[in-house]
Image (cartoon, rainbow, N blue to C red):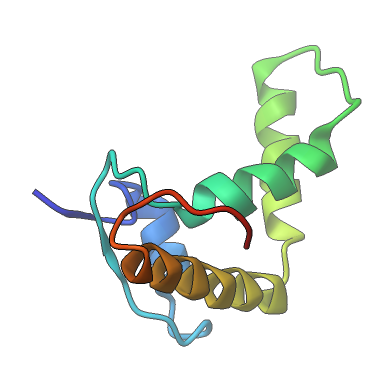
Length: 101
């Protein structure tokens, strides 16, 4: 069964907000195809949180939410443009391995 954005309903509802002008794209939950959360969201947030030490889980949640909130619309739009190009390469290679962006 295919789930939108790898079964991430909160990310799905955020990204598919009319403000972004994007619609959902069906994506298998365990697909080897690159997902935006793999190559953009987690990497971007990790860079912003790197080097910080947190005393409580609440501090981690607050810092993570702040890092997420600081990602602007243009960054998300660029992410999905790059994702579409990667998916086109996956299709063009018939699922075979390829290197590069």
